[in-house]
Amino acid sequence: MTFEVRPATSFDDVCALVGPKRPDANVCWCLSYRISSKLNNELRGPARGEYVAKLMETRGPLGVLAYDGDTPVGWAAVAPRADTAFARNRKIPWIDDLPVWSLWCIRVRPGHRGNGVSHALISGAVEYAKTHGAPAIEAYPLDNKGAKVDLTMAYAGIRKNFEAAGFSYAADTTSTLSGFPRVIMRKEWQLKG
Image 1: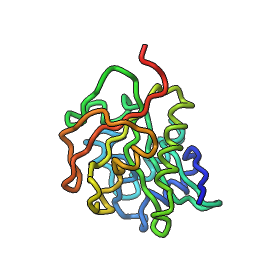
Image 2 (image 1 turned 120 degrees about the horizontal axis):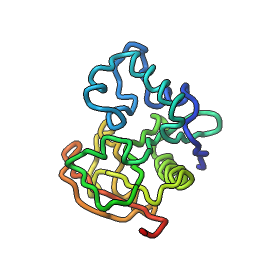
Image 3 (image 1 turned 135 degrees about the horizontal axis):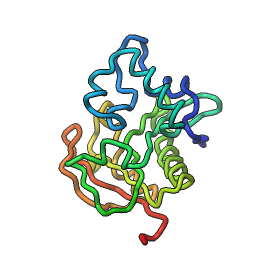
Image 4 (image 1 turned 45 degrees about the vertical axis):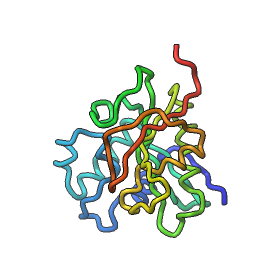
């Protein structure tokens, strides 16, 4: 299958992928690495979605969406690392001073998993970062070595999918998710200078 990946400009489509099933539910909205932990803990229920809508109005797309026809089937969060909590994360170290972008959340809608959506999202996030001047992009996936990963914690992606997209192992981290270590995978397209 082929999927069209484009910047996440539609709030309704972002909501379909990372928003709640009930308006009053308290779901992530992919904010935890985008805002301070204090603000993340303060925002509850509908306030989280309202905050995402405001961010989209002021900052533009917060990631990319994969579409099967007109139906949004996947989401990937991507932004300059300096604009995320990864800028201050002690468990996921900076490798160098290259102003990399981070790709930290991949979500595929149920019923569409196993069809290559995550691969399309990774490629789309790379292209989005490139077109916005990033010299490289990093991801912090699970190094699950083929073991089954709980889908709730698979949002970080898995190492083999990033390797398939041309990312290289860059460093270990002290971060773990669902019992698996996370590694830094990087894809560069400009020489450091």
